[in-house]
Length: 483
Image (cartoon, rainbow, N blue to C red):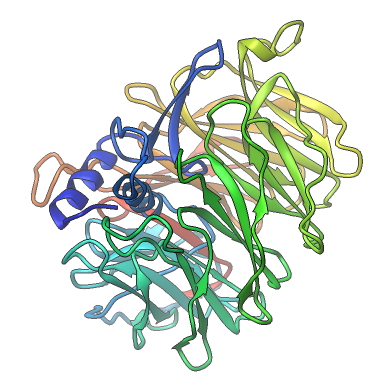
């Protein structure tokens, strides 16, 4: 995102002294009149990026705050650590500023010796099906636009394999369900790169560790999401004139590793950045968030359906229920849309029928002033949703459980001032929240390590926080592992 390492560090340091964003790639504040003010994730008061350099800044922020549970690593010079077998899930945390990965035995809450990456900074990670290999995406620290790489790490030994070179400034990774291929979303090569130069996705044959020919996508990508069947990638692109607002989605066919013509999105009614894209489990339909509502997309034809949503709020996060019957939509109130609404002054979680688009049960989550971003995840049994509201200091970020059967919200759970993302354990017993800690600079006495905060879903009780490294940027859960 930056033209030099010094600027990169300034951005990282600024990000780590303020709450981070998990689901949105831009931090926003919105007045009741509907006026939105936006700044790039982790970057204090960035102006709108009308230039290529500004767009580059946006991409680095995206890389730093990449989303939980979906992405990978780069590195050499790793400490080799032998592990003991555990039957429970393992959490892997990518620590940006301490240049390492922290493995955590989720059943005991114990963090083991970190896996060192030398001078490289991990920005994303993904666990391959079968949980035998962790793939980590990392960037170098020499200069902006330096080549990235993906490093496979054997979970039985924590030993890294041969690094796989990918594009510059990589920011996300997705692995196909059969474990044969990985796809890495790359960033901009340099601030001076022409605005029309496309970004790329690098396919990787995981059996051979070979990076294949890059696939051209948009010019300012916001996110990359893989369909559940692994046959399709959707890369959400940003507007050239107003980076941060979704303009199109580039589909990538993973059978041929080719991109199709972009799916154009309607112009937004209010200036809001994209904050989510979700697929139904059968991969037949995808749902994209825009400020004017949720847009269904027929994945076979690329055709857009009728926009759906609560209409009295602006959607900021979505998830599809486990049985594909509904979309859980988190919406923030806007005065101009709220006239006569029973949900005035409340953030809401609304269930929308995937068949008809009709609004069903609506849970009110409170006003939550100061919230900068929202994320929602649904429990494996489909009974509950958990909403993370990331707020600005000095307010605590919160997790709000919602009973989907009754449409009622439970007691708000405080999770600290630097919460950035959440994930649910495979058995649904625990919600894990990633806390970024504070990072001021190399060797600063004011640095505080990040934490993983467990919440028991049966009682909504916060457990003992697990300390990790400096400036954690992402985490992922392996269903089983060796630690």
